[in-house]
Length: 318
Image 1 (cartoon, one colour):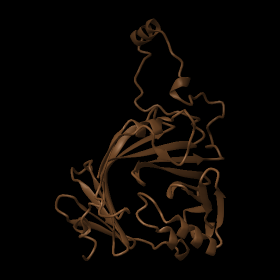
Image 2 (cartoon, one colour; image 1 turned 90 degrees about the vertical axis):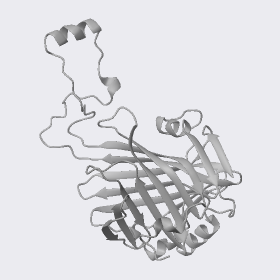
Image 3 (tube, helix red, strand yellow; image 1 turned 180 degrees about the vertical axis):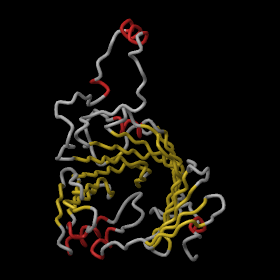
Image 4 (cartoon, helix red, strand yellow; image 1 turned 135 degrees about the vertical axis):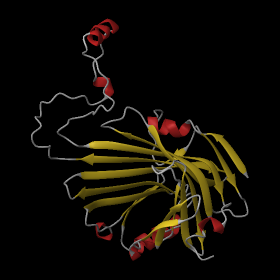
């Protein structure tokens, strides 16, 4: 089965009414095709070309294409394998690829398959094993997830009117020497049985509070849902200012705050040598390092249940 869409009415975790944000518009403007091998009704393998756009509130005025890669994922012997093939050359002129499973990740040269690095991966806590519900590119077994979360006494908030189910995961499950976890929320659409949002709040060692929220975007294909994008916002908030920078320092929050001048004044200033180009304008208070990072991943040429095991042969013995 092949589904072709001019992606206008997409399904995602948030509904803001008739308004649409620039990041949502970026996804909606893409023409997305989904090719599904209908030998299975569930998603056991997934491939797509992924374009990554990003914007930092301190330096950017719009979302910019920053990287592209080919994504392949498959469940093999109840273990998830993921492969990323970068479509952008590295500084040395080579193309890099990565393959990972639950235990290990390898980095290698895409052309020669020469393995350059092996990195052991830390296993997820036992109490989070039930969250490994599959590939995460379509429907999940929400009944099983809810049952196991109840058994583990996790906080569960259910809004049947809005078909929403949210799990609050214990902070002690997420230990790190670099940060202290404050909260972790995972939300599902209980009508569609898909993961819709994930939010974490953590305090870094330098005192910054970082809130990371991810919104998952799907396309409905028949009775199934297929992931076609993700919108991530990383809000970093510093309470303390940088010492030595006065609070009354003049700055612009956004490009819209920069005053305009007439063409006549511009030409006069240029003639007098008072105009120069600044390639990297910094927005925001220079004494406050707080910022918002927006990352949009858009999937194209999606293929479901077509990936061969051999794609992951450098890591798996099959």
